[in-house]
Length: 249
Image (cartoon, rainbow, N blue to C red; front, side, top):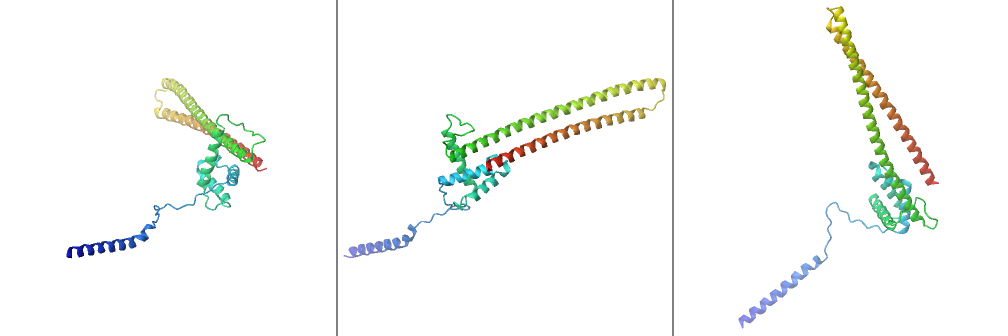
């Protein structure tokens, strides 16, 4: 009898503990998603065809694929500002990623036969914009390759010219040294008591003149090279302005 009463009491206690534990655990079922420090819960941008076309137009206008390395992010940020009318949360990186994906998909569609620079009449505006961006990006890449080649050629030419000027100066010094030694021999025969210090000073003076001549020739060559580079840069800037005006019209 007592044993049965004890068992009943134990069962009642276990049931009470279960109910209490269930009540306390009930709020914990609503779990909170805690993100790591520095990670923001950003809303995913849903791109539409209208947004894609607007983005491609901004890329054609701004030209982030034709910008030097230090200004790339600034160019994409400028494109993002124009896209804020659709979604204020769009960032420059989001615009860059979206445009890269659009161009990659477009290239895959045309990998069998590359499109010509001119597009067909029946192609829509989005296709024309994509092709225009790809053509301009490829043209910029080719210009960079040619520029590196030209700079390498100029460097080699400058190095060759410098070596030639140095060799010429050394030859002139050697000839003058030989002439000076012959004259000194003749002078020593005529005047056994000539001062060797004066001969050394004369030789040093001639050597200084030769070095000065070499430096002046080198400076003149570098000056001409700099003028040529500036002329090419001005010509390139004029071509870019004409291209931008043509695209704007």
